[in-house]
Length: 381
Image 1 (cartoon, rainbow, N blue to C red):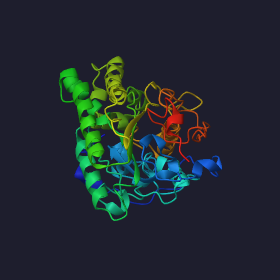
Image 2: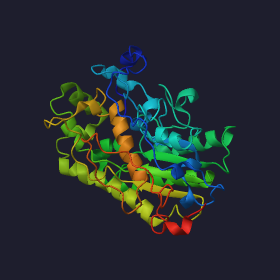
Image 3: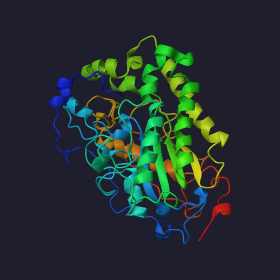
Image 4: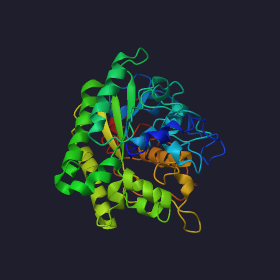
């Protein structure tokens, strides 16, 4: 979502206090897997389909305000703080605390490699290195913008002394599409935000990574059905009003729930087509994997009484709270360890008891299109 319509005056009065520890969160204290799963490969893998989780040395991210974690630490009742980018809490690349306290993909990866490099800490924008590190997500970004982000990420990696660009295995997380969908109704299938254009922008960004970053696995979080927004902000007058500026298509009554779902599924189809095409499986040292757990969800997280659980959300009723980031990270991680073809396309966002899964001992790698077909071809010591 974009904040370009928010008055500058609001920004000037936003508090930059550190996140309150009293806010709901989700961690997995003492989480452990089989000891064998924490071991690195005896030799650094040359194939992207033989990469153990402990082999990954670098983690990064591309995306929009959801990946930048806007509002993740905003106190309830403080919608102005949604402008702040709480990157340390971001579900893909935040590493401010530990897995005991807060789930992110980076915090889980730290269990396998405590020295993994690139995760974000603190509050700040993508150009503040001390905060963002390799999370290059920018609030308001659309699919066309991750092309620029990909170039920026490559430039940083090529010039950073702690990164061995040729030999280090890298996990790059991508999540994009919400801002494109917020403008989709204005142009529909023939416009800038058409499926074809959106797909090509994603391909262009991933190709930049492929051309410049050997030994890289790109994990793309699937698009979500934005009809959920209308349930979240129902009767929430501040949120309802804010979404007029943040997401015009969500407030356009002629753009029906079915229209929203159909449009979002076009982007989901585009992601699936990119993976199925094999265009990023043409070399051993690079691959692309889609994580589709959001695809078939149309209902937001609910309380036992059936009301929307706003603990999941920042005060603008859209961006994830710290609890929302932890929950999304849990389901994303579980998708990552599931084989391609057997990944969840729908999860229960309302159930906090769903476990954080371990990799499969019989195929202890980041799951890819190829090792999911026959892992035995990729087994290494």
